[in-house]
Image 1 (cartoon, one colour):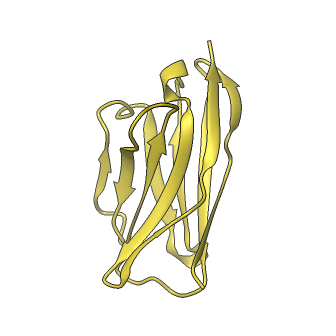
Image 2 (cartoon, one colour):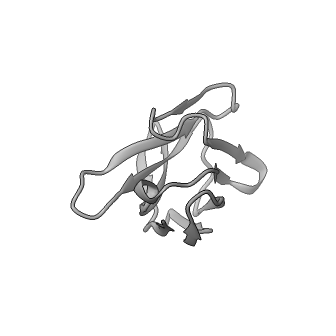
Image 3 (cartoon, one colour):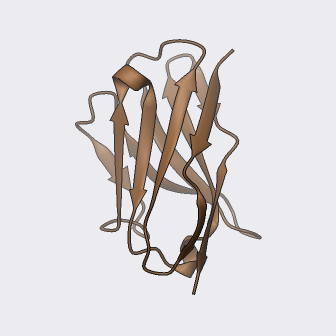
Length: 116
């Protein structure tokens, strides 16, 4: 059974930083993309960032570009999201995913709250 477990969320003041982690277990994912989405209260889920298997390609939403860095460690089956200069509008539940030719798998999400 595939499981994705996020960690690293929490409460932080505006201007602060957080590093989210997402560990995948259950089977080996080769040639997979991994990434993050977020959903704020009362809003649609939105794309945050993604990274390909070799880490040669990364993509960011305009809202986080320049403030966030996505990375992955394939040996640990883990994807990370470093978020800096956090703003109150970054408050949301952040969920990770892994996608390969078999499908897409999601984590439960981790809450990020940024106070002003």
